[in-house]
Image (cartoon, rainbow, N blue to C red; front, side, top):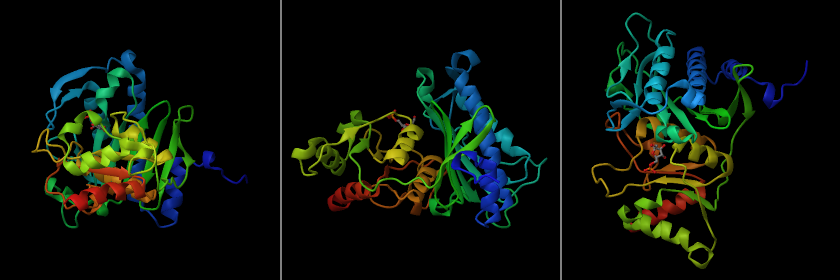
Length: 339
Ligand code: P6P
């Protein structure tokens, strides 16, 4: 028998071997397989572009007060429908839905809660820039037959799995179940995800940062000082030049950082003091934080670890600093010293 190389291990085989090793159970294996199949359907819809009649606005808004793209709504529906009947989930929550949704009474409920941003970065869709699906898996509390919003409010440290699917030049699923972060590439001819990178590792140091600098005037002093020192380059206190990237699609920026290092920042700013940052804790920061930590990186609010936060509501926002561990720690020092 040939020894399997990374490129011959399908996602299905990887999940079966993880279950056989006792690192995941059958229900979680099924959940991840269902989400991956849903992402394949979303990838097909996204890749059709204008030919699929799914570009542009849906004419509706979501709980975030954002105009929904047709693909936001379609992606959300694909994920809900795919997960409804399998018996592995108790309830779903989505950026696109004000409240969580229990699995319909017509179907059996399982032991997990699934949260997702069905199509993150969707404002990039109409300009053909990479977008993605982000998902997070929690356990449904024991003895709760019909979970509500309050049952999702668990710290990110309690996630049993997290991942994203990036719809870029290739479609890739990046996944962790708490045993490293691994990347799978969609083989469209097979219609299956194939393991292409086992154990992704983020370099501890970096010369590359990702932030929307147009918000600079709204940042708190510690952020002004930290980014000012990055921009000062080797003549400044950091003693080295930095490069900047900002795709304005979290999945794409985080994928680059998982692949070659960097720091991604969406800080608190006083543009809208009621919002402690733009990104959402439950289905953006927490799953990305788990993926990054499992790859040797760090994820912080600028003052504390994202995964330790106790959520107080489903769509809560949080400042995000994540990526190369030593760079995140440097950014945190600026904030803790400023107090
Ligand atoms: P800005 C996309 O709308 C998103 O939620 C993330 O994917 C992305 O990192 C961020 O917002 C971009 O925000 O303010 O630069 O448009």
